[in-house]
Amino acid sequence: MNQDPDASFLKELFARFLENRCSEEEIRLLMEYAEKDEYRELFSGIIGQAVMEDHPEEESLYAMHREVIDAVSTRITPPVPAPEKAVRRWLPYRVAAAVALLLLAGGAWRWYSRSHTAMPVVNVAAHTPVNDTTAGGNKAILILANGSAVTLDSTANGLLAQQGQTQVIRSAAGNLVYTSTAGASAEPLYNSIITPKGVQYQVTLSDGTKVWLNASSALRFPASFTGANRQVALTGEAYFEAAINAEKPFVVVVDSMRVTVLGTHFNIMAYKEEKTINTTLLEGAVSVAGGNTTMLLKPGEQAQLGQQGNIRLVKKADIPAVMAWKNRLFWFEQDDIHTVMRQLSREYNIEVEIRGDIQRHFTGSIPRDVNVSTVLEVLQKTGGVHFTMNNGKIIVTP
Image 1 (cartoon, one colour):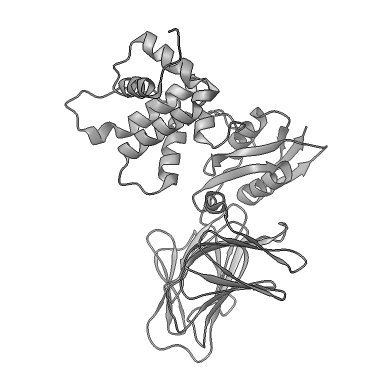
Image 2 (tube, rainbow, N blue to C red):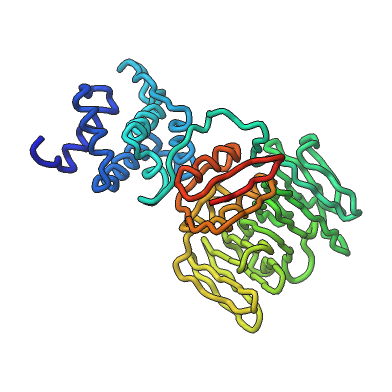
């Protein structure tokens, strides 16, 4: 061709590719333009539209994200079914084919992540090192009011304990549900859930509030709420969907910070090793108090409590980054190596040692459900950093 094609031509060519109607020359041409930086945004939009058309019922970006990385990871190039087959049966293959195209063109990761300087695709199904580590699991620990500890991944589903007038039930999905069977006890019976490194867990409190705990976190709460408010204490990180009760505000206490809500969706990140305690509001309204400052957040805003007790307001919080952990993603936005490795250490329960001055910053997203070797391979392919795994320890060097 003597001149670059317009958007409509590439969209039509891409549609033909998905329907397996392209000639070898047309496929070569499509890959040639998919490789060019000036067409990245266009192809990103085309593929995004194809995904949405294939999954109109999916509201979760994570579900689409996972399907894409699964296709890339296993290097799928599936056959297109015969026309008489039901369309629904081959919908995932369209996505796989689209990703395979950009993979061949060398640009799959750039679309899959969010930056022109993002990280490249690696084969998740590649050989696993001897001392590799997996992430995730349900090995959370429940501490009952009498001090007894229950490891939640080894217990049977059903009634787990009776705390006063509240039943503690392990659901079929492996989550914990508190259900009040009668009037509240005279004295609150406090329970705690602790998630070690590499573990996330969900609990439904007696008022119906749902809490998702990230790794290396702890939540202390009464089995049944009494008094004028519904107060819990948090260390680490958690996402809350607080049940609405205008007469009893829901209160989260984190060190010197106090978050008060009536019913809303919000995330609190309060790891000791991080510089700030961040409260991010997704829906509703919350009041954040710390030091001598009280701040009312609107949806999309974030309050950052510094070590000196000062609160900084971020009016446009990076919600996808904040919620990435709950959606089982690592999400990096120009993060330095120390920030990145703190996340990996919490997720994989692995010791990290950083040697030397590493100036590289990282932008991109990686599924948390892969082995640590896969994550390290992705990071290393960006250049400027090397990893060695030895007896459960990651050594990081320039």
